[in-house]
Image (tube, rainbow, N blue to C red):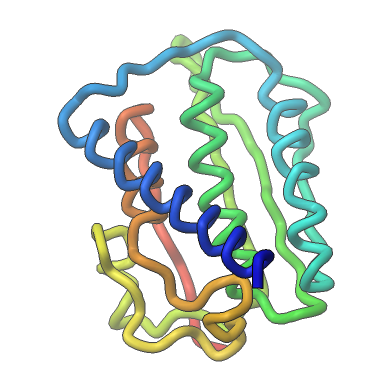
Length: 185
């Protein structure tokens, strides 16, 4: 009873906060706040913070990079929201016992600033090709939840269509791009 009410209240608060962030981003009211830090350690920390969530579904979460450390300017809070949304979705739609990988590479063309390359890979059910062009649209959710997603009473079904739209806006504000590749099965 009370646990369900608390969990649903927490989910609703998270959804409202994401909608507010998305609205602020679209109106230009969230400026970049970059700071200098080690991106490798920061992403390791973020990945580790999702281990307990992944463990609830017996999912193994891996952080992969060839870098030992790399100091650069980035907006830690915005990057946290991006990575959190991507890892949350991956955990939500990866079957129990699955694997999720967050991979980091850094590209730094001579005379230019560094660019992060983040890749989230999982072995979930996949998304049919016809839905991929809309995956980052506001309020878009798949017509049916992917085959391996938990029932709506669990960790969440298809979602409200806010998280990936917010993720795309955050990436755009940070002068990045985001794309999805998926195949069913």
